Structures are given as structure tokens and as C-alpha cells.
Length: 247
Ligand code: NAP
Image (cartoon, rainbow, N blue to C red; front, side, top):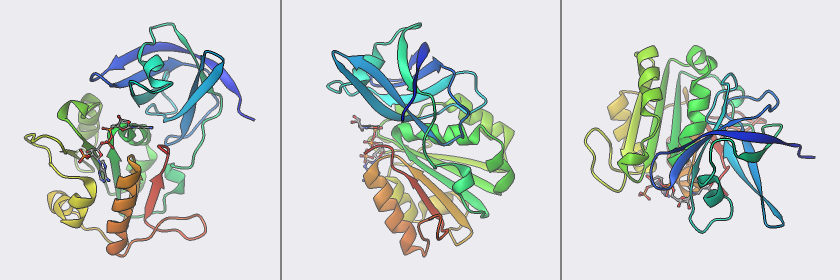
């Protein structure tokens, strides 16, 4: 049975008109970086819930999620109006298996995200295991517009901490931006532009974690399969691990 507890809003950061991060104080059970939760609110007589990955690491004092305000949505417009001190329900126990424990060993770890899915990778990168296990970590974030390239301070800190190990690339698909690519993730891989830019080959020693737009996940998986990589399953380990929180 799902157990809920009360969370208190500490910050509601508005990055753009509809892209935001919510920081909460709540005494949830221990969880692993990469897991997600559900946020719930009573709307009239209904209890409306939605899933969100934690962008915060397990050691962080506050819980953090990234959300898109969908103006005619049921829950997100209410989240968007939350003020400091307001209450929301949050699940006591985090859920999901998109965690580093599920990723087989390899040389390089590629983390591919669209939009709000960046958060789950930040949570994992705020912990030490990925840095101990992989030679290079390549984080690729694809967004529609430049203002959606969020958490740049945190990413800059990671670059400073791991200058030889961490590579961050981004792609802004609906406008031309200096320093950013201008194509979708599957194209960046199939054209080998990401491989050229990072000087890193994709082979059986590569591990991929993919999260975000369901169509991106599908198309990227196909490209990676064409390179000879396979889905990672507990029964049959492979190179491609995906998270489908956005259904
Ligand atoms: P988005 O539309 O998925 O765009 C983010 C990036 O993904 C863009 O660079 C986009 O490229 C790319 N993309 C879209 N379809 C792709 C595909 N088939 N293959 C490869 N790349 C693809 O997401 P967003 O900008 O974060 O949010 C926009 C809308 O998504 C929101 O209004 C909301 O409805 C929905 N959303 C829902 C949830 C949820 O949990 N339900 C979460 C996030 C967003 P292009 O610019 O070329 O399309």
C-alpha cells in the first residue's frame, strides 16, 4: 500500500514561464539516486497524483523535483502556484529501478535526457559511485529553447570537480544557439556528431542511461541497437537502460 506523508514547500523556482523546480522538506524513507516519487494534492474531492524523479541526491537536505506546468493540466498548475510553507503529499517510499546499481560495468557512461529528465541524472551525478565506476561520463541534454538549459551552475561545478572525466553537451532544437547543437539526440548519435565531439567511440564497453520523451527513448534505442548494443535486463545484462516515467 502507498504511504503518504506531508511535504512542505521551501522553494518553487521558476526557470521559464512553465518550467520549474520544487524544493520540499519531508521525512521520506531512505532512497537511491535515480528513483522517483509521486506528488499528490486534493483537488475538490479527488486526490490527484503524478510521478516525478528526484533531482535531489539522497544526502540532500531538501527533496527536489523538476516539473513542467501544463496550463490545462490537473496537478501542475496547482504546483506552479505553491508558495513557501504550502503543503503537498509525497510518497514515503521512493520507487523505481533507474539506479546505478542496475547498470552493468563498462568504460564510459552516457546519460541522455530531454527536458525535465535532466533531474534524474543530476541526482545520480551528485553521488560518488558513477565517478568511481566509469572512466568518462557524458551527459547530453536536449531542450526546445536555450532558457530550458537549467542547472548550469551545478553542471559547471561538476565540470570543475571532474575536468577529465565529465563531458556535458547540450542541444537546443528550436533555435540556433552558439555552443549548443541543434538536432535531436537520435540524430546526434546516428550522424556520429556526439561521438566526434567527445572523441569517444560507442562500443560494447559503453553504457547508456536514457530518460525523457518516450519517442526519443524509442528512437535512440533503435539507433543504439543499430550499433550492436542491446537493452539491459536483469536476466540478460546489456548496454541500454531506460526510464519511462512519462507515460
Ligand atoms: P519535449 O517536447 O520532449 O522537448 C524536449 C526535447 O526533446 C526537445 O529538444 C525536443 O526536440 C526533443 N524531442 C521531442 N520528441 C523527440 C523525439 N521523438 N526524438 C528525439 N527528441 C525528441 O519536452 P519539454 O520541452 O520538456 O516539454 C514539452 C511538453 O512535454 C510539455 O508541454 C508537456 O506536455 C510535456 N511533458 C510532460 C511530462 C510528463 O511527465 N507528463 C514531462 C515533461 C514534459 P524538438 O524541439 O525537435 O521537438
